[in-house]
Image (cartoon, rainbow, N blue to C red; front, side, top):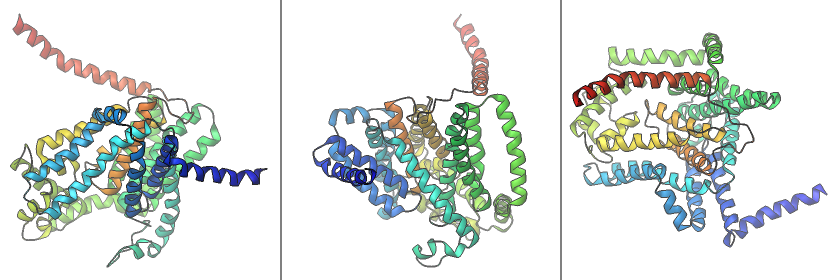
Length: 466
């Protein structure tokens, strides 16, 4: 009976795909599957993601309904990303950059137009968790060849996909160590929620399994490869979760244990020690020898970008103007001679091109998306985590405009946002975690500080009025 049922199930799924021509639910079903495909391909392939996104849009169009879509587009969470793309489009009018350099940032911001569509779609779909599960499984599979390449870098798939010269990178099977660290960090920290919820529900074995998966991501980053951006932001993201969902006593104990573990791992991991040492080595190389380096070059990019911003603070220099400005400001040699189209800071990237107006739109988008995830539940935590990670890492990179990190933001915020709009609780069956007493105490202190600052101002105003 079981064997006979298997082909029937397969046939029903195939017929469901074919019935999408006449059945709206079947069309939505197909769009859901394409979203899962995008999530699965994201850690592996940029070309595959681009093709899958094109198919996703084609599949979505027949499911659109005018009035619900227009209502969805009018929300601030949808209007903000649209405004960012519109600003990039309008910014071409006063840009003096060649069209080849203008079109690139337009393409970088065009992906934000997917956010309103994802909000709209997953507000009516019940399969959003499939997307997150697909991304998690894909990253778990990627971790296996990452360990292999950590042992023998010549086995990296990049050796066959990269044109021209190739430098083996330890622990990186596809793409680069920055993208991989972003993905593994996101998965490891996201799993903290279900692990905590399962432990509180006394479901020890499922919690242990998920904790082992999260720990495997962390161990890979500590001993195989990790980016400096991930090394800085990972403790902050973990602290954010602890403040939100753990008691103060638990947070303090966790800090002590984490400190001891970090010291132990630092002592036995050559990869981690090399990553930490690179901070001071890069700075010293740039300051003393004028040599380009990761940290030293960033400081030079930021210094020049601030000067560019001061030259056109309101509307900026226009879309795609960054490279031309660096060409004009290039020195005779060393780090001063570097010419880039990316200042490695999201705020400065926007400020140079579109001025204060662009910065206001950028931070408005981050803010409205962050406020959308104020509730409880697994989905809310994932959405909050994606926004927080993107904001933190964008202090050191232009991650909204980068392909990998930008699509992680679009997919994570879009799917989680749509599910949050549909329901404020997780569909995973796990009870929502209450806000911790530690977080409530911190909030109370913040409010008290605000009242203390505002009090004298209020009383002085009152004295003048009297």
